[in-house]
Image 1 (tube, rainbow, N blue to C red):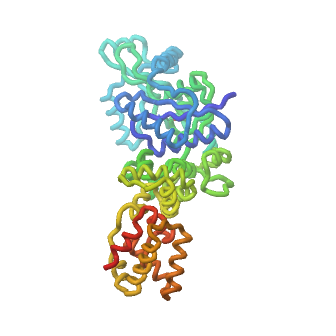
Image 2 (image 1 turned 180 degrees about the vertical axis):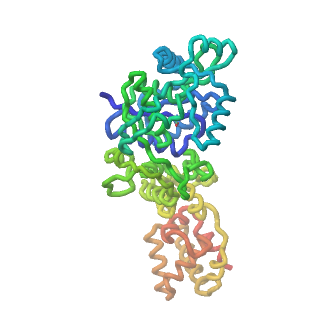
Image 3 (image 1 turned 135 degrees about the vertical axis):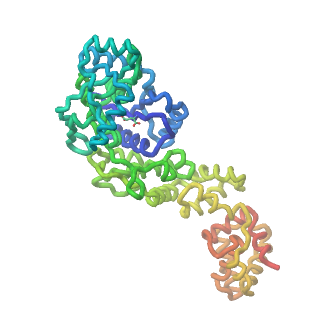
Length: 477
Ligand code: GLU
């Protein structure tokens, strides 16, 4: 039988890291078992769902490399089918009309609160006669459809992550509401639990992997599967993503949407790699830097942790820096070029851009670090205090003079690394100046300070952009 998994996001907000991680686990497992990964957009909350959020979610999935099979299903297109199944449950007696008003429900809640009990409907309209129903309708009362839940029922399933789970029917909040309020004998808009079961069955989903906040829904849904005589999928509940204080990661933790991670300069491969380890600990993995294909080969639901997964910026940053470091410089230079373009910085040649990328990539954590790291190669930095102090020394000034003369004598010399080293060696030998002094003086001229990237490689770049001579000259009287 074909194995089919799905992500069922509600488009009521931007693509959130929690949803992205659920998508990733579904995708990885689908690859592992050679199944299909499908999308269902759960857009039946008409007030909060927006098409721009659907677009954002699909674009985010694509950016992360989580491609899906088949055209995404839109839940709102299937409302008539959902209603058809509600009708079936009504007709079989598994569900009934409940006319409890909002005020009556509030009253019930108040009483329960006073007694310290959790909210639970008292199923008061379970056994209304036809006449009683007729009477309520003629009074203009609206009704929801409720699915009967047997208080004594024990719902059990073998969760692929958490092992056997048992839920008591009495702990499910009373009979389950399947649809919103409607007038007369109408059936109102179908609600989440009913729609999910009908759609998962329609999409022939064999494995449901979703967040642990859905565990009690699973218990309710299993009862619906049974009442509708649908084949049960397997269920897996993944741990929540927590902030550093151990609370559920939320908007208050600054960054939660996938867009924001992209804009901050994370590479999609790095973010996906990091997310895979958020709540998953493989028995054997040689490294934590693994591509999605590599992860999918060793991924197993039994290696998903039960405990919440703490989000760590430190680890994400480390993984991102590893991806930047290991990326082919040609490819990375193309990505970095967009950042330079935004600053209106024009590299003199493609070769120069690749060399600069190569020079700075080891000190980058985020892509946007390319701006700070490459700034002194495009803009002339001012001389900082420590640089000024260093140049007060006569030997430093002499060093720059000698280097400048050498360069001028060579007439528009385009340096390579070997030539640069030769110049330093020659001057050091002929004038008895320490190489370290020569290089530090040059560093101040180029970068305005005593720190910066490899000097010889930098010199090669400054030479090609024809700014080495002018940078030295500005330090001399
Ligand atoms: N729309 C639900 C959510 O976003 C889907 C839950 C499920 O996977 O069934 O939480």
